[in-house]
Image (cartoon, rainbow, N blue to C red; front, side, top):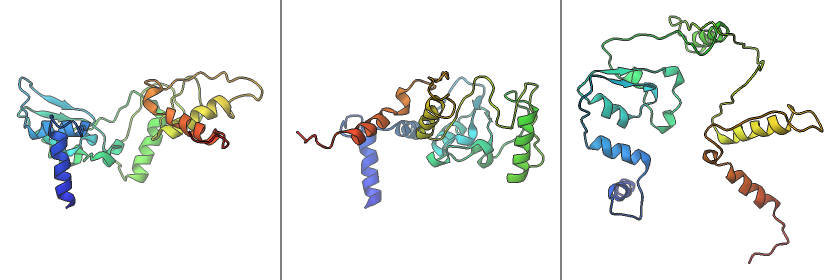
Length: 208
């Protein structure tokens, strides 16, 4: 019964004339894959962040007749919860090359990263080499910093901490200036405002 319901749901999503149920972004991709498209006029296809390809995208790309180059890092796979299959380990390659030098950080961070891979992942033959820029691994903060988090709540809490918490001298306004990448609208923070309003609304107000 569940399989029949799922099939019925998919049929409605894929039906352009059915306005009761709209298709998702993943649905667009699946329809495109099922159409077996052929990308003509390309000498090669470069697939970046290949460790985060899902099965539909991987099938679509690998079915093309031209050569394919897959680039990625299996240690940075973060979309397994969305069906990512780590194409770097699931695809048989004719040649493999390791990119071990990074220009994003210096020797301090690269040393710690290599130690983490050796101890936690038992990887001993891919030592990461950093660039020449200065870096630190002691938690010190100099200049502009960025905060990366898995959920918006963590980002909100960090913003509150920086603007209202320990980083601010008591009795003085915060001198820290910050911004959310892409603007605030994409973070759904208005939901937190809605919760605050519900929590602070007067209990004496009777419903209309």
